[in-house]
Figure (cartoon, rainbow, N blue to C red):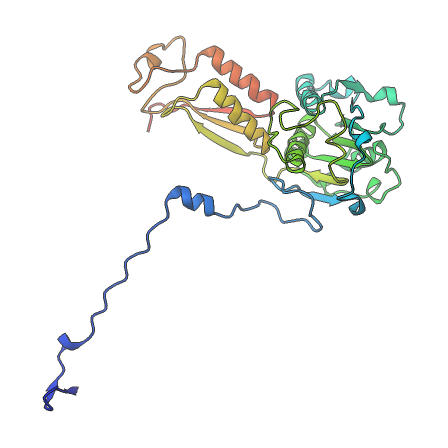
Length: 342
């Protein structure tokens, strides 16, 4: 190939005359923190149809508004001061696991600010206005419990009262956490086959209240976000709905590394509360590694006294306190103990 020179004569083109193309520099990676902030959080369940009510995490299996016309209506001031009442299953329904039942009831007592009363005193009638009912009955199928919830809130003739639910076909490991909740006409009924199911809805209810009242309630005692303890103010600010939910996975864990950075007990409890708020159920407690050994063993005291980086550790009493606190939130503690550290 020849080209014309500035002086009119032609020259052969050499490879030195060809344009040089340098490779483009690789794009800079975003810092991990920025990438995490910009990431889209995936949802583990498909969005159910007609789901404009709340932004819940994780997304419930089924959530439907019952009275769209009531959304946005002003609430009479006199209705906000009504006392709220809490009603629960007869004690016989919780004989299988009284500790779990007490934990679930305590959660609702914190949210409502009311002391639980037995449903037997209602003599089979619907709940009074501004009332919450929590029912556990392992002898009934989910379809029957949906009908019971509908009757308690005064919707015994509604379409959901006798409709079949796919929860009847759930595996036993997931059925334990299944629950149904119906809010209608200022009455809220929560039913489950086991206490853990009703406890999981308490976490959902806290998220609903956070969104409706505009403040972080999380798993702290009721009243911390402007909630007027013992009154019906919060129950009347929520739209009427029917919700059914169960987990997609039986094992939902989070890990906390207390080896490289010692975490005080109060922080661990707050971490467990946050797990319960998001319905996680397994706490991976990383206690040993090559940097430190945080678990005190009476027969091997030098494991903690010879730590290279710090001398802080968890005593037997500390571990018992964490395990008991986690159990009250229906969380299983799985200690991570490696010998030797990797």
